Length: 295
Image (cartoon, rainbow, N blue to C red; front, side, top):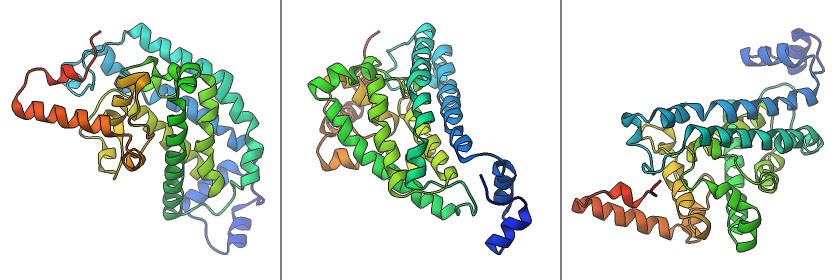
């Protein structure tokens, strides 16, 4: 809760006029507790998990030929019933694990110093903090993901996420409850190391989940703006990891590709990509069929 009762008090304390965004934040947050504001995270997660995958899901159901040409594994078809079963299972995990975890984790947010007051962070400050969050999460997630592909980790936990050999957007958070808890650690590590404003924290949660949904979409759209991000993996990159399955020792990265390149865990993907490019150059038949599983 803000320690100011009026805009004038806030401006007197900050010794300047509040920006338009700060005035909006003041009007919304001045009579709300920090815990209440933090609990908005649950709402954001629910909306993202429910809404963001829908455009691609509708494409999958409609089976438009205009869109299907961008499907990475075009021969794999998921029924409408299968899509909504995935969503239902994700929502069960959300209600039983993700939501309660958010409700009880506020003390850790307080402890690391994520703030809700004024002033709001500048755009540059938010950008730099978000970059740190992505890099920290990406590196730690890489090693946890590799561990989850050892025999015990895969058989007991990670195999649930790999039930979708050709992933869809709703399958991004589809996982064993233990994996949801374990992968929450790298997600929170960046904000714990470089704590910022609650708005930055929300932005991080929203962007990270949207990125996960994109990489699990099953479609490689040429117009996506993420293609201009250096070392970004994307849907095609992560789809290979699901395509190979439990035996996969390739493409563990969650966002960027540099860890896989440095530690040599992208060799299978690069070999297949090079092989398919040679087939295309040679004009060989159904190249897409090589990169797809039959129904």
